[in-house]
Length: 311
Image (cartoon, rainbow, N blue to C red):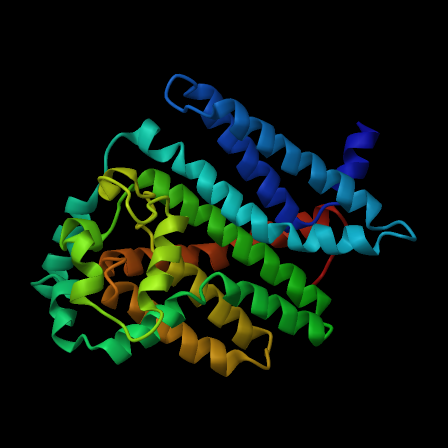
């Protein structure tokens, strides 16, 4: 018991969130072994990450622990992508349905039309190119914020920001389970015509292909709507971008103006580029508010439990 307490006192609040979420995924994998094809691999990876967290948390405090400290800080980046791909093999086999029809009805109830179709009237190659590039900055924003806080020697703020961002990602992943959806580029528009109907200038098609490959539908995929990641609701791009914008202002990041401008355009791009319904954006906003509200209490509780009172 003392040994267990010793190890848990070494981990931060963000590590706790990662461990709990991985254990929840493991339980789901074990509960649906007949439906989840790679459940053994999923569980192996989950426990490998958990073991790494505890080992690196202890080793980074040793005299030669600088490398372990960096590994312990930045493992969060691949963690998000690894879990995102694990969910790919779980959501559709377990849920076996999508809820795009409800999200479409929600948009039509609010706007009396389909926002992605309405925005087609302003489509032009220069705007499309700009917004596709900005959309591609999404996964870099938390990393840029983290580097900026490190450069300003704001360790406490970095710890809290890492916790909020990873906690937010985990909540959005839960949302994907609750409301699986694939987005308007498949349901309201012809996915195969996207590059033709919304051309860019130089690298739009290349950037779209990166996004598509990340969602398991590289070029040439047959029936991409059946295979694409179920990740439309809530809009993680909206939720996480709003969190980065909020944290950059809260902790006086020197790049807060960049985050505000880039983030605002990125959120608009999610609808303009047909990745999301506006209902997804509203969901992202709600999840963002819940992340900040609940995260504050969880972070404070764990800080007090481990006697690491950062604030």
